[in-house]
Image (cartoon, rainbow, N blue to C red; front, side):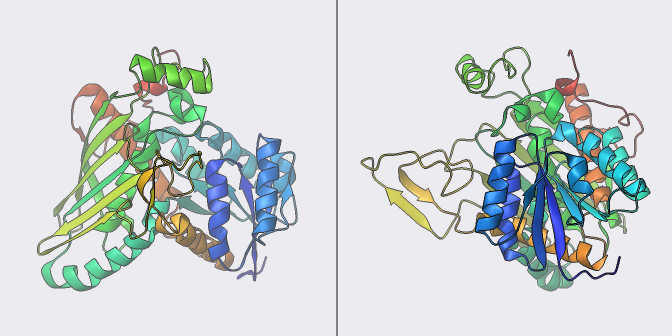
Length: 413
């Protein structure tokens, strides 16, 4: 194999909501073709093939099995975009196909979170390294356009003059996930803390990291977490989930948390304490998905709110119809004054994330977010779950989390 490759041919593993989000962001990425897709749903795979053709990103083939896609001469790298509970088995299949020389795939990217537990995340990383695969962790908020621009300005102008930032706040909230498995603790790995706190802790850690230094220049000192069930365990809303998803989602007897809070103390190379404050929720009712970020330092601050948009649309009560999520992800209303994200894929970070991953893989370079970062995120998440369960602050490093499984993810709990 000769690098750099002129064009990177990628295959998507999974064809649901997030896969289409990634696919649509690829129109802003050069030197890439989406040449394959495999998922458990033939209908969803067919949709990806059609969208790839419409966007001029193909031709894309729907493969009946994962091995068939991995063994195709038209696939250089794969994006793991399938549900959390499938990812480790998928990584094992990729590892086997590469080690047995049935596949020429040389790079793999995995959607957040990397895994459901520390032991699973450690194995994901081991398999990628053992197979000699270049690996990237798909944490879109790190590549969000306001994060890229805001961090560049803060560190170049403010931190250079007044000193490094010391506090990052991150919050992400919406009204609840799209698919049944997100609501099932054993399949997803938890509730909103697993689903969304992975974004918040990593984008906050990224903002606090000196751009001239690796992420490992910051070490986790301690974590303190709180989880709660605020909305979806109420009878009315638990019944809604049952009606929507069937008996597999039982929020009366098997709820997952719909609110989570985290306080994380980091330490830089000079021994300075740095703080992350993060909150996530599936119990937010507003215009739609809301991301709020802040970065504070000695003489400066930065803030971003994804719903404080420049473009807004007003529709009176006489405008009828249900359009879904054409204005903003997790849209909750079809009337009134509503914010519009004119480029969700760019603002949320998917376009620059995929541009970065494609270029890194194409050139044989390590991405700025790797499976090692995904592993570090899972370590923080498990510390937060353990803290919430025990009511204690968890000091790092610690070995007691190695085999820990959150309460809501324990089978039969």
